[in-house]
Length: 429
Image (cartoon, rainbow, N blue to C red; front, side, top):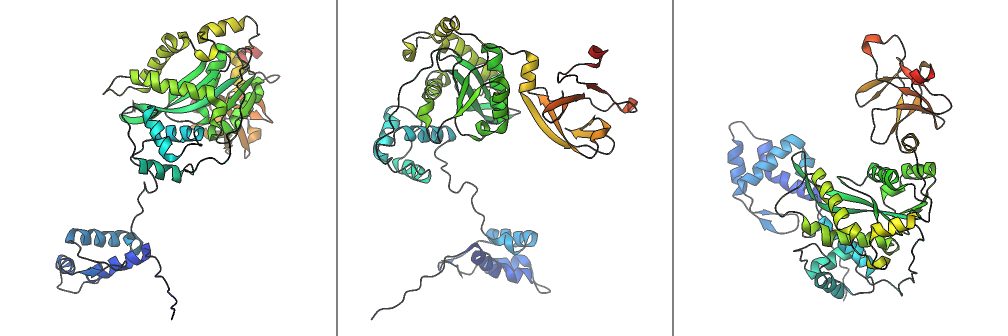
C-alpha cells in the first residue's frame, strides 16, 4: 500500500509574526488593573510551540522588545529581519574576494582543491590571509566559478605595440584602508599603463571607482604624456559610461572594451596590480592608517624610485622610463591645449530654467538667457572645475553663466561665445 506524502509548507516570516503576536497579545489588549510587566512575565514562564514545530521558553527581555516593536511598527514589525550580510562571506574581505575571482578566471582548469592550495602556496592572497577550503568552495560556487572551465583555454598570442602611446590599458584595484574625515575608507587605485613601455602614465588612489575617477586620471595622463591612439578597458560601469566614449571621440582616441570575464586580455595591467600588492603595499607602515593624500604621495614616490627604474623582464630587461624615452624618438606625440582638454573633459548637468531666468546648482542660483525660460538646459563644466558652468545647445557652447548677483540683478551677467570658443566679454570689446 502506498501513500501520497504531502510535505509541509515552509515556515514564512508571516508565520513567525503571528507566533510572536500570539504571545504578546494579552499585553496588547490589557484589562483594567492588569500590569504589562506581569503579563509578559507570565508568558515568559510558559513553554511555547514555535511555527517550525519546536518548543521554546522566551525570556522577559525578548517579549518586551516584541511588545515595543509592535507598538511602534505594527504587525509587520514582528516579522524576522533578514540579515543585511546574508549571502556574503564575512571571513573573506574585499581584497581577497577580488584576488580569488581574478585568479580563478585565470586558473579555471584546476579543481577547487588544487586552486585552494595554489593560492596559499604561491602567497597570492594578502599577507596573513588564510581561508578554509570549505569556505573557498562555497564562495566560488556562489560566484559560479566552482566548476572547471569546459574545454581547452582559448589560444592567445603575445602582443606588444611598437611605439609609446599606441595603446594604453586602464583598470581599478582595491587598495588599503585610508583615513578620511575621521573614518576608515577603502582606497581604490585607478591606473593606466602604456603597453609598449610599461610606464604608468596615470595613477591615483581615490575613494570610489566612478567615471569621474577614470576621467581625472585619463586627463592628467594626457597632459603629461600626450594623447594615446587607443585605450583598452574592461566592462565595468565607469568604463561603459557615455562620458568616457564622448571624451575619447573628442580627443581622437579609440575606446576598446575586453570581452566579459576576459582578464588575461588585459594581462599587463593585471600584472602591474600584482606588483603593487607584492612590492608596494608591504612597504606601508604597520599599525598606521594613512590619509588619501599621504597614500598617493607614497605611491608616486614608489613609482619614481622603484617601479619605473627597475629592469622589466617583459621588455627585455629594460627600464620602463628608458624604453619610453627610446620610443619617443621614433613617434610623434599628440598634444592638446588646456582649453581643448577643458572642452573635451566636460561634466554635464541638466536643469530646468526657472521663470526668473535662473537655474539652481549645488544650492546656488545662476543666470541664463531669458529665451531659455521653461526649458531643460544642458550645463557643462570642465573636469575638476564645477563652478565654471557653461550653457550648451546642440552640443555647442552658447555662453558662460555666472552666479546671481543679488545686488545687481537687473542686468544679465554672462559672457557670450563667438564661433564656439569661450571668450570673456573683455576680449570681445
